[in-house]
Image (cartoon, rainbow over all chains, first blue to last red):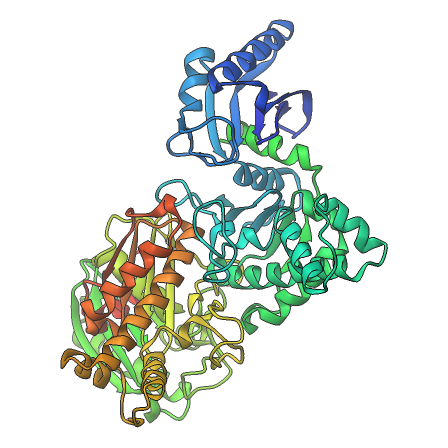
Length: 308
Length: 308
């Protein structure tokens, strides 16, 4: 059975799994991203790790390396100016790996990789048209049409997080204002909660992150509940707008913020159905990913090779 | 050489052309839509016309009928509740034609048909990723990814005109508020112009349609020029948001409002480049269709059959 390495590069951690064609992860390892001062040093570490594993499994039919990374471009094979990574500029990972390992290597962005994982092994199996949304530090998206990820002309399609939801709205890391991810993400809900506290003349809570706000909401705090309701309201609106582009059958939500369960999902679905064009009403399922968060991206990255 | 009929159904007129594989329109006719009290009577008229033409051209290799119509659904083969047509409800045109003529028949929406025409014979030749926007009574769109129209799960993809640009904004014929087509269309600019006149304490001009406003702008009237600038500002914003979905190489604008030329195109491009995510800046061409308005939809509809 063919095997491939699936690698998920994040701002905090990098995960690697050796995956077989059935989507089973045979072996795992991980690194802290910040412990590598340059991508070259990290690539050396990966190659060393893989070579050792291959030495111990001489009969393994290892066929290549798939990588999901922020701003990973499938066309260029490079990470292009990822704001959340310690490594700056254009990093030609595919070239770097193929030079050292002589195995086929493929790179795409992290949301696309997770969407692929969901399509092959998760909630989007047998679903040729879906939207995949990751709600983490930012908002990432993978758009699937006719069973294929939409990459577009330059490989950079699927940036729903940078659709402008409110002109002249909240400042975004991209340099513009009002982007979706400044309203709908684990980072954004901190701002929303702080705004609600201020509006109600309550003291600021500097430590309040998404997990903290979730805990307060579950204990019945109105302000924390309002923060989730408001986030769901915005998310439902942008999802309603998004389906007008590709008319998907399903929308799958993924990432840290989905740990809030119904507290986020219910207001999101309510807002979606309220805001969506009648043609699409009561037709599109919004649900959470059925894969463990760490696995989807590894499986999807590996599938760039296994299912190529 | 294979021939097909290409039919463009509009709220005012219905156009038919007999088209060859090179995109040449050999024969044309047209009808007023309102002169047919039911679609059945119109289908009879088309079949009679085609049968006569075929009787006069016994050697013609006629292979079928392609139709573009508002709310035409390629999956169901029916027009589904088109607000701009005199014929109401669900009209199974493909079934109706195939029963009478025994030729293959295909139906899609009017913007998709025109996008196909543009792809095969116009400005989008050899361009696998583009957005096609029609600016007429409403705003229609055809989205092309990897050289194919995106139809989506239910055949109704590409409704950019019904993306909500401003929540709680202008009322839309779809029953919601703030849809793009209430800000960016030949109809919308009338509202915009009226609002500008009112803001400047000038009297209302009930007869002012897009053509009239264009004339005033060309004669140097500030309010009319502002109406085009404002329309371009909004259009540039929604186009900037739209490219984040499918990362096209080109955006092609089409339809009545494009007769305004640079008066609309210049502020649209300015606003697009100001609002677009840096990744897409200075990469995407916005231009007008290179096909005569009446031809694009006929050619595109025929190509549903000729290039199937």
